[in-house]
Amino acid sequence: MFATSVTIALGRYGIWLRKEHLTPALAKEIESLGFGAIWIGSSPPGDLAIAEAAIAATERLVVATGIVNMWATPAAEVAASYHRIETAHPGRFLLGVGIGHPEQTTEYRSPYTTIVEYLDELDAAEVPVEHRALAALGPKVLQLAAERSAGAHPYLTTPEHTREARAQLGAGVLLAPEHKIVLDTDVDRARSIGRPYVDRPYLHLRNYRSNLQRLGWSTDDLDNGGSDALIDALVAHGDAASIAARLDQHLDAGADHVTIQVLGDNAILPTLQKLAPALGLR
Image (tube, rainbow, N blue to C red; front, side, top):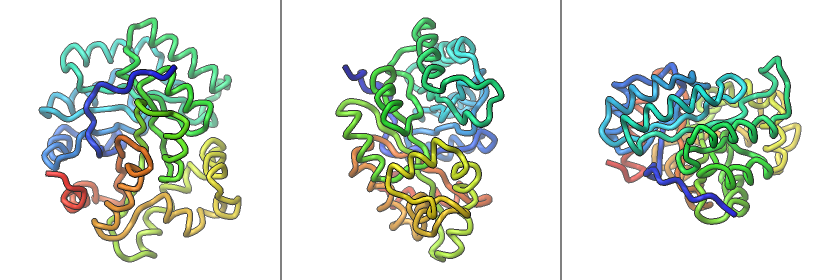
């Protein structure tokens, strides 16, 4: 039996930001451009103060975590933070959780068992299923996302993965993939910006490599920084219209919401200002 879909209004497009890049002022700018949500990446701390500050600075923007790392943050801590934020700002926070990278923990346990136990603790702490999402790539964890959360937040994926994920999740389950972008019509320069973000650490982590191999990419594509074809698949580049068309392929494949990660130094706000009209926002 599938979970009830998320009851929080995310809109079609959100912005994925590393936690160190998110400020209340940037959150206000992103809201003014018409984006529906901000996803806080790079394992925000369990007090979720950064999420609360962004919500407080805006009027309707949803803030989600993409993701709180289960290896690093106790469920009880993040549950208490969820309840604090939900009480102050009802319906504007989505708790995204996930296993992170097992390679980066010194206390190895079964990733799947860890996820199940963590979700059990969130249940016990009365964090609603419809207000949480699960990082998921492979079939087993996608199924768990459908059964134990509002839905899935896949990272480093393609529209082909989105199509397969939707087929497995079925209707009524949130699917919010992340996709990287570089606003630059010079192909070589765009690839040179995007490749390091894909290569390190993701092409050296077994869960991401396995997922890409399931999608048909070869070892040659994954090694030595990633083939040009792989980088082009994972990092949309070109002008605003071509990037918007690539992001919309996720929606056509069954995504409910696409989380956009802008790459490049000091490029976030200028890129979003150009991209928003191409996406039909504002």
